[in-house]
Image 1 (cartoon, rainbow, N blue to C red):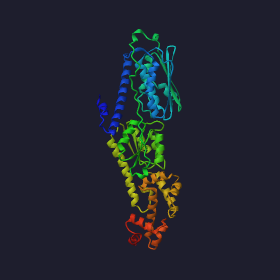
Image 2 (image 1 turned 30 degrees about the horizontal axis):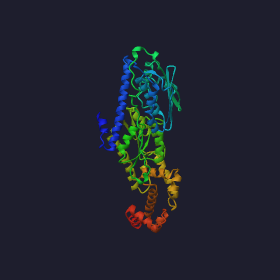
Image 3 (image 1 turned 90 degrees about the horizontal axis):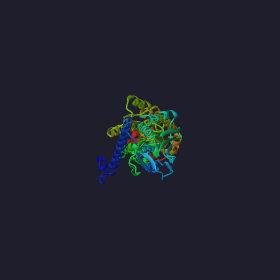
Image 4 (image 1 turned 120 degrees about the vertical axis):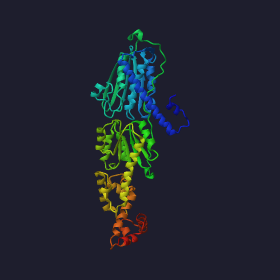
Length: 490
């Protein structure tokens, strides 16, 4: 066993460490698969990769390979349909080549099919030819992209995190096997790869045949495990900050979850659109987002959230595998608060996140020391300043009414109770109800500075309908009674 496998077999290893080693194992397997594919391409270039034709049933082999992807499809709630004919035929094919072709096509199908999408794998043998179609729903491939799809290292779009090697190898292996491969796609609907291979004895020369072995597959499909973490939604009862992780790679999501789970409530999203939806629903304290993601990338996420009044204040740290000043500049210009290149140091990332949260806390402290709400002092951008000015307008009309409660406050601002709570908490460190009480007490303190004020009426005039409760709240905040405070100001 290698060191990773040995660690995984150690039953005394804590569960968290076990999961970290599983991530390492999946990624080492993926790297090994990538190296092997590059070696195969090199052998093809050098004319050293020869067909090794053996007798067997090709549909039985494809069925076994398809079955190994069923779990990955189920994890994403993908409808996975397979159909084969003629499982009893005697075929002639290169088992290793067919395995690599099928595994690459099915891996891509699972990878690029969205949750609740569908995949079909249909294989028929007729007149000595194999016709295989792997079709999946999803973003699709444009006609322009289809022209270059089988070129080495070609990637269809900026948010495609693939290597551009798999399909190039598939094309080379299909050609080597004297077959043909085509792609058909309707953008935003579906993509289908059709492979035709000769599987009759007469298609191959005598020197190509080797002794047959069984149909057990030697290739293990390298598919990212879907790691799910329950999002905890009882944040109001928990003082820990909320961290939203937006990352399409499940292993990186797991790493970030494990890195921050002791100090933060974690929310996760697998693409930019889900990230935006969760950010607007929960209003997190900070966001870590990958840049290259499907549906919407990290740049689009940052731009949209920074322009929305609900989330304009939320610090965003962008992660990317693309190094370079231009990429960093684009992220910062869009409104990101910080930027890190993969592979990243978790120590540096945790420090950056902590500093951004700490900066927010300093703004909270500034608010608590002010007698009058000053939007410019606690806002980090113009959108926050406009929001606080809207709050001021509402409070000027309603604060003195004892019946003014959270429901009316949130309705006046066009938010849900929870959204209002999260936004005000982020800007001031107070819950919405604490904020209303704080504003009433600050208004009372201003009134008590006037020499002609009737102290017994101050509480009622700022929205308290119980004078003893007003006096209690005032003393908790200013460490003296209203009467003592008025005397100090005289």
